[in-house]
Image (tube, rainbow, N blue to C red; front, side, top):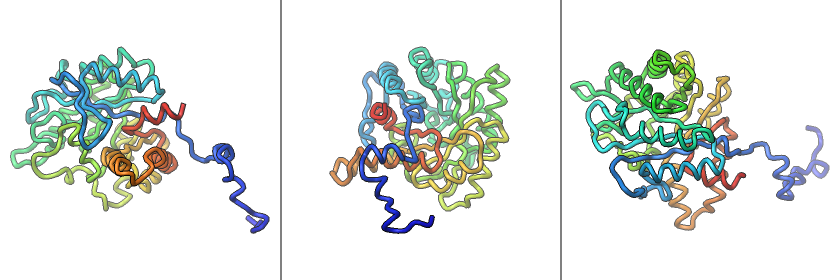
Length: 328
C-alpha cells in the first residue's frame, strides 16, 4: 500500500450500513448453523434448564415442535442428546432400539429429515450412572477399548433409527475407526461421521451437564479430553488420526476460547470444520444480557461471526433457530 492519509481514508467503506454490508468479509448463513437439542424420557412437559434460559429438556412431542420451528428458520441441522429414565454402568440405553434417542431420532427424521440434517451424539455420559464417557475398569478409570465396543453399538442403533450423521464426542482413541467399521459392516457406508476431534476438558461445559444430567459422580474427564494448555500439535494430531480413521467432518470444542486452534485446523484439513459454541458461552451471554451489562443480540452475532471468521464451516449453537430466522 502506497497511499497515505489524507488520500487513504479507510473510513470511507465504513460510513453507511449498506456499504459495510457490501464489503463484509465474513457472512453467516442459516444453513451453517446446527441446533443442539435435549430429549428426556419420562417427562410430560418441557423442562427448562435453569443455567441456560430458553433451552429445554424436551418431551418427544415438544422436541418435534421445536425441530419444525428450526427447519422453518432454515438451519442446516440439529444434533440430539438423550436422557434416559434408567442409567447403568455400561450405558445400556444408548444402543437400546427402544431407547429415547432412537425413538426421538425416528420422529425427527420422519418430520424434518428432508429439510435439515438430523445428527446424533455418540457418547455414554448421558446414559451411564457414573457420568463418565465410557466403561469403567475396577479401579475407576475409563477403559478405552471396551468403550469402543459400546460406541460402535450405539452408532449402529442410531443409524438404524435414521440418524443422518453420527457424531462421536467421547475422545476415546480409535473411536472413529470403530464406528466406521461398525456402520460399514451394518450397511451404513453412506452415513457420515462428524468427529469431535479437538475437544478440551473445559470449564465451559458446566450448564450442559445440567441439561444432559451427565456430570461425573467422581473425578473429571481430564484423562481423555484434551488439556487446555496442551500443544497445538496435539490438536492437529487428533484431527489427522480421525481423518485417517474415516471422519468426514472434524470439530473443535469449545469455540470462542479456542479460535486459534480452530484457525490452525481449518488451515490444515480439506474437509468441513465444525465448531461448538458450548453451553457456558451461551449462559454467560444470557446472564450478562439479563443484567443489562451487554447488548444481547449484538454479542450473539459478534461471537458467531468470530467463530465463522476463524474458519468454522458450521457452528453448533443454542441460538441456531433464533439467529437463522433473523438472517433469512
